[in-house]
Image (cartoon, one colour):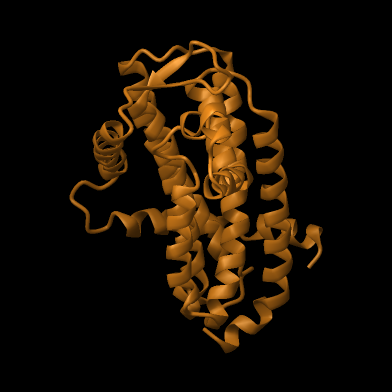
Length: 282
């Protein structure tokens, strides 16, 4: 399918996309007493737990900026930023993975562009993610984290995160139609990604120059894995601009941008190539 056809189909069925997004949000909170309030309460509770556990483990109360300046932020705010971005990536990709099989009934009855299903899963979790950022704003205000114009650059890692989630979601939704066990494998992969995204530890401290001088092969390998992890790079960009109020690290920006664009291209090509066979397997 050509790019023009994608955009034409997107415009034609944009109303359906909106309805699918609304449906996703409604179903998520349909039988919940707390409803949308849980979107704000859940990251607060999990962040407090992570801060207590890992703050004591690493003996940390605050985290310094990566460039060695005197800028520091509370460890709780540091964890919260990583937690919010990782949670969106995790939940959105898992929902996208199930999207084709979950909408099998509609796919068999009426034709609509099938990419709308993983896209709607990504979009409704993205809306929930944007709402959850209210928690970050509240904690930054409570801890009096300083604000500068760099905070406006925070939109760049958010857009890159959305692109990465959509690309991965397309790949997973395609693979899950033919390989049902992919859902369980992705849960394991997400756990590895979580530990390789520096959500609850500070890479500058863990892999500082002094420690790397005497580091074993395992630590060196993990540091390289960390630097090549696009989700970590996006989290690093977000932390740099939003809470540390500094410019974006060039290496992280290159890795995150290249991976996000490449993932979308691979996802679109794979999805378009296999979508006509979905009906035979759902």
